[in-house]
Amino acid sequence: MLSSCFLSCQSAKSDAWENFLKCPDNNCIKEVLAVKDAFLNNPKQLLTQFQATYESGDDRVIGWLYMFRDSVLINPKMGTIEERLAMQKALIDAAKPYEKDPKVHEMAESVINELRIVDVKMGKINDLMAANLENSPICYQFTMNGDTTSCQISMNENGEIAGFYAWLPNGKDGTIGVLKGKMNGDTLLADYKYIQEGQTTTEQILFVKQGDKIINLVSEDFDNEGRMILTNLKKLKTGDALNKIDCAILEGIIKYIKEEKIAF
Image (cartoon, rainbow, N blue to C red; front, side, top):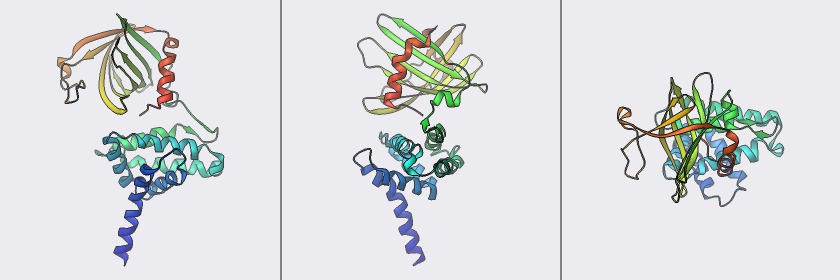
């Protein structure tokens, strides 16, 4: 009987995420809370399911996080401030042991990053870059023959950076997404996450800082889907040189990223 109960309990936990995936709209609070409970009971199992969903090209992990933040953590109807703070802390604490896990670290980091920017007391979501980084952002742009490449970067005292990157070629489909990485000397290596044709993709991107410019280094190696990959950093070639600009010029891109909810 004990083994039977154990198996049924484990099955119920895994069903919580499957039930959320079947939910047809943004009013699935019951399902959102069930995933929260399942996560607290077995974070590794839920993170594994999150990873499988993400690898299938489905962005519902971010959807669940946003719904939990907006409909639960900053919603006074869902409990006292103390109760909602306790929920926030419990989920972050449950994810923390898996930040270095080789299989689910990306999902654990997503949970931690998306939940820790919630200001439960003030009832709002803080800007990710403002929450993580201490210095004012610096913006860069390259333009030629209608092609535009733009970048915004903020960096803290440890050299960690966050920001966004937008590649908008004239007459072709471009990409707009967010950056997360680290500056080592004058070299910035970052992950670039963007959504294109409904698919979420993360690539590496590399810059070298030269005075008031950043130089994009590009590769001639591509994967099976045509995405550039940095397999040999010594063979990279010099790409566009982005000049420092007033960040106000990039307000439209910032608005787009927030509206599309592109985030790590």
